[in-house]
Each structure stands twice: as C-alpha cells, then as structure tokens.
Image 1 (cartoon, rainbow, N blue to C red):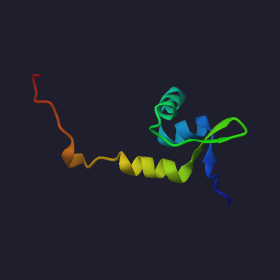
Image 2: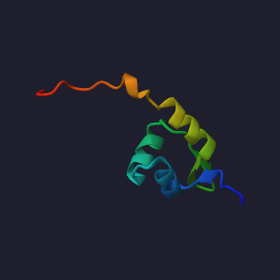
Image 3: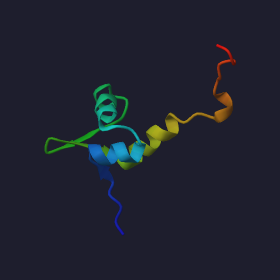
Length: 69
C-alpha cells in the first residue's frame, strides 16, 4: 500500500487532531511548513512528524496549578 506523503488541509487537520482553521493559522504564521502545488496548500507528512517531535513535551515538565488557585 502506498502511503500519501502530501496531505491536504483536511487530512493534515485529522493527522494532527486539530481543526482546519488552526491548520490555516499555523501555516499563515509559518509554524508548520507548507508545500504549494498548482495553488493547492499541502503538507508534507514527514515535516508534520518533525513538527510533532519538536513540540512534544515530557509529562514531568508539565506544570500544574496548585489546588484552590
């Protein structure tokens, strides 16, 4: 089975589990890399994977507000 490398907006939003509007905002702010082919906004799956890796956090580093705050 061939796995698509380039994803459209809907596929990228599903892949990252975020809304399509957030995908557009991230692309506009140059937070995620885009590919334009024939005017279409596409996303390279490998670059999205690197985006996920760069933005992953270790659960121990998460801060939590004290109860009652």
